[in-house]
Length: 230
Image (cartoon, rainbow, N blue to C red; front, side, top):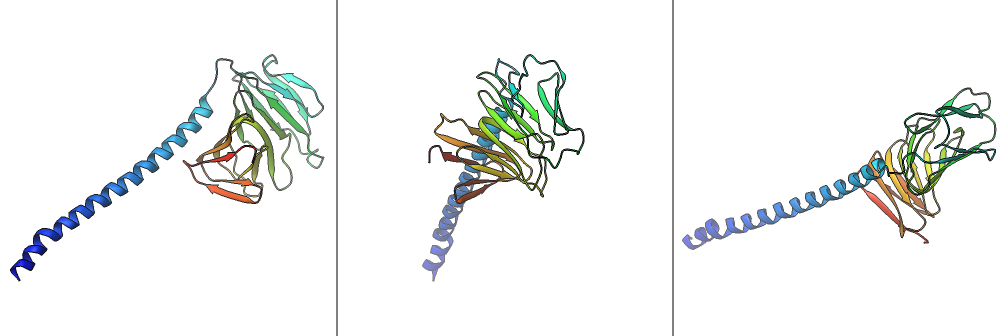
């Protein structure tokens, strides 16, 4: 009995202590890895949003009728009006779409395209209030007015999105490699054609990546990478 008691009192606590240390280290490692992933994702989104290159606010707007407007040279204020939407340029480098009236809301969609050269960037505020920061050498094609049961835009290059919430009209971002679907959220998409992958990084809310018949929902702090050309 004394030997058994001695064994229980001295050897068994050592096993418990060793197991506790292993558990603490394992849990700590998992939390640290999770922290690193979230920090890396937040840093990527922050860099994408605030990466204003020396070229400044340089972009070209192509209207639905084919007219091109240099946003670099255009004066601040009213630029055009299409389908009941007023388009204006602000002093701090924003292209703003405001609904003037609903008279033309039933007409077919008219699309605008904004393009930035290498070294340029520009911010667009869409008619639904969604904000898009377009990075260098990128383009965004979007309807002048959102109608129907979805809000759909097309992107090439890189852009940071802050999407206005509307659960009746999901917001979809399309590029040659995938479709990203959201209701209202903050995220970044890097979809340059010459890169090896299309990367979607989420900061707030949730997004669904759709490629062919496969989809994946990601949470804040996560990033998806879809290989280009597949």
